Image 1 (cartoon, rainbow, N blue to C red):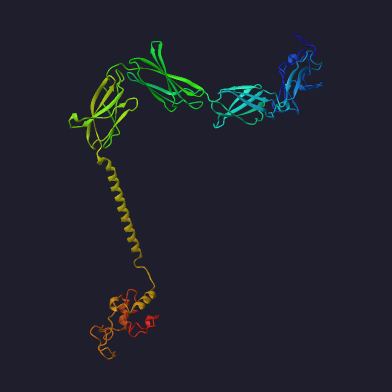
Image 2: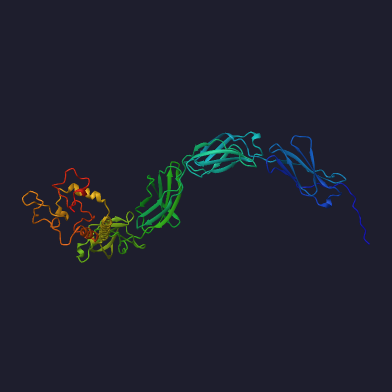
Length: 549
């Protein structure tokens, strides 16, 4: 049978550890600690007592905290207020017998509100400066100063700002771009962030030594070397030229070190002459500014053996025209090398003795020869001749044909024919359109009374027989006699009607479509009028005189 034993109650013998006080936001301090295990409570009603006082004060503020919590918040109107902090354990018997650990804590920080003043920049060399300033007032820091940030950028370069952190004045900043104008601003920063920047300070970095040239290449003949390169990416000033150094390599021994000064910064090629055949050389190039020579770049090559040039390959034909073409060449990479090239050529079918030779070119200066004064549409034979100080060597003949004059005009003829066809089609369409417009206007309606007015106004100048009417009445002796017979040429319809004819017949004929006595409007106005008896001022109503029915 087991028995229970009760542990006597007593005060705690320890206090919580890991006490801290930090400010996650302005005016707030959070006190935290590591919670104690129940076995260390040593009695009932266990709790924590948080004690704190602002720096410089004598009275402590105490706050009880439930045993299940391990943090407590302290509010303050002062930014980055410094506090002394203690956390003590307590139960129903009393407080801990252990002496609490006192730590320092701070309420939350805020960004600084003042910028450094009296900022000065001293240029030490082409890429280094020294910055000095007057510190900001302590009450404007709103926290703990962690340092100063120097923001600098090249004035004419977008997105070039860089930042360097300084601990105190003065501060050395290196690695700037030579021969550039900079703008610099300074700001103090704490745990919350950086404050306002100072007014910009501009300064100019002096010229520096240039960076290395780019793409150095070397090509050799028997006694010459051609070196080519590109300008440096960062001249760091105004380029004043280049230094080219060639050295003869005899195993591991360097002999005959010679420097060629090139004063033109735009010259990026140099021919080195009078070299020893079949020898290894080291070529070094450095760019220069007023600050001196920059980084060096070097390449190695060997000159070709002595002797007449090796037989060149067949010519290469480029840009063939009607009367000219460009002829290039390919030279062997082994054996004695050529320094110069010329082209020999003649018309196919002619005697080879009539062959012509072009001017001689330097292989380090040009890579093709322009052969001119050729005949169109003609085959020619060409030959490359390689030369050096030891002699010349001809290559194999090869054939090429100039372009005929018709070949160049063919495209134009086809184009002209096409344009003519388009013009003809457009004209036919225009003619068809005009015909359609005319047909749409034919048979249009017009006012009958307007037509009669036109006939009335022009009746004396237009013979009736021309309008499809009757001939004019002519009396036999010039005197009008009602009983006298009509002249031979008059129509009998006025005096002697056809058998069976009558007024009714005339109306019937009109109704049935007879148009022999009427115009296309169905009117006979003006067809029977007697211009000799019509009053001259009578023109408003032609029907009053124009019918004899």
